[in-house]
Amino acid sequence: MRFLLDAEQRAFADSLNALLTAADTPQVIRAWATGDRAPGRALWSRLADAGVFALAVPEAYEGVGPLPVELSVAFVELGRHGVPGPLVETVAAAALLSELGESGPAKRLLPALASGEAPATVALPGGGPFVLDAEAADIHLTVDSPEAPIRGPVPPARLHLSSSGSGPTGSARPSLDPARHLTLPHPTGELLAAGPHVTRAAARALTWARLATAAQALGVGLALLDRTVAYVKQRTQFGVPIGSFQAVKHQLADAKIALEFARPLLFGAALSMAPADVAAAKVAAGEAAYATARTALQLHGAIGYTAEYDLSLWLTKARALRTAWGSPAECRAEVLSAVSAVSAGGDPRS
Image 1 (tube, helix red, strand yellow):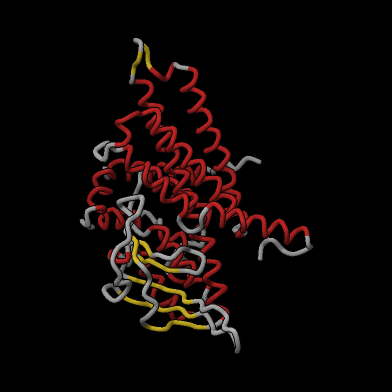
Image 2: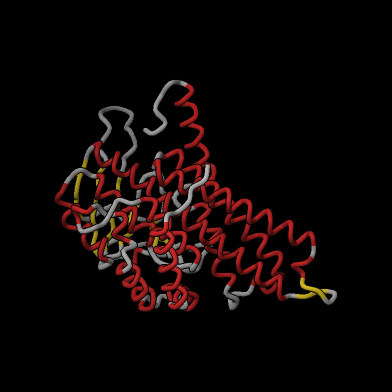
């Protein structure tokens, strides 16, 4: 099956590509990695003006969504340019509040997410043990889903809100990507909601987070491929470009095929928003980007290892996104669970 973007979606992608090309994102990434948030926050505002964050927010709360296909288009470009910050987390926070079914928290917080005024970070069950860029986020959301006790009823899931400066306070954990700052969540603060509906909203938010991560990973893989193709055309051995060698062509062709196979899975998942479809798209995009990163590193040789060379900014991001919001094993388990449910006569969309 082929998934082709319409003219408006392609124009949106082109406009974001032009905006990010002019923004000199390698310098923004390096500044973010050292703790200088100013260039990143300025870029964040421009992305918000372009409507990126409003795509995950319903119209009732000053957004234009939810539009998962358009969001995927945007996040492919964000990944292609390596934009740092809690991008996926802001989308997940918007999905969480939208699905909560309580207008109070949504009306209070969603407009600021849509406008880009307040970046968010979020901790969800199944999303990993750490939160991203807590020090750069103005809104911290934590879903605390207690395990079932040996005796007695299962305590309800709870959603807590912490404002900037009162969120996660633990020391930062090292990440494969220097521009990603990880800390342990701090499940305290204002209690926004509690009950089974919080669990359901968190599960839906996790699906949105995985979709955005898959799109971001696809964009990273495409950037790595483009940079490597350009490099092998310039680098010479034995008097000819190394891109003319059959072995090099085969490696690049394999990377291209993997990325192109991931693309329809991504947009198919954006249309269905079934958790298993999104998990499959994340596996495909994450593994394709990771394989492309390994090919890019091999074909660049020693220069690919150097932090001063821009390629490293995408190499590390491909590795980090591969396991963000669900490892390949966890996402494959989600897909197999859905297949088993179909075989047993269940609904794979649940």
